[in-house]
Length: 219
Image 1 (cartoon, rainbow, N blue to C red):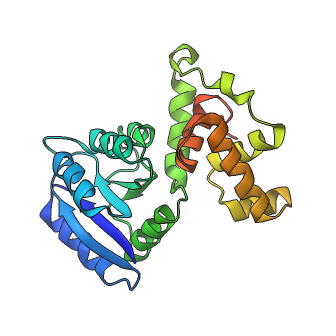
Image 2: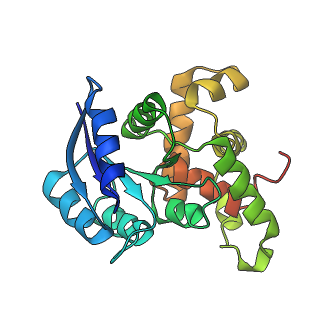
């Protein structure tokens, strides 16, 4: 069973998600929280597999809560929820350590699949979010970007190629098909990329690729 904690300041949203996920045979809602502060306490007490985290909440927002949760437990998996795919805080949440992003109007199937994807350690980046991230970096002056490019030199040519494909939202299976290699080979490349760059998961790898300028608007 995948244990889920739902964090949102709106009761109807929490109850709605709880009903939808509770109907899934492989998912169990173990708790709810109304703000970021309460979420941090609930994660420590309940140890959920996935945290469904709203961004805009009183007392402590979802970004700061995500940052504290991930700092306390590197294996914590947070799936960010928001009303708009152009939410100004989406990128900040991903940088804070969120493993993925989902719109609140997602269908029951999309919600459940999103939870499963994140629980399995995969990144969940909708195409609209990927495009937004690329656009944001295209607009930002290069001087304001973190010096990520220097670390790219630590990667082999194939690892760099895999990193770019991760940032474009491809799964391990899709990357394997694209490069015509075994999926197990891609998993090895991904593991090495994360170790070399000191990253925690695929989402962080995608963000790194944007910061390093490996992914640009239009490709």
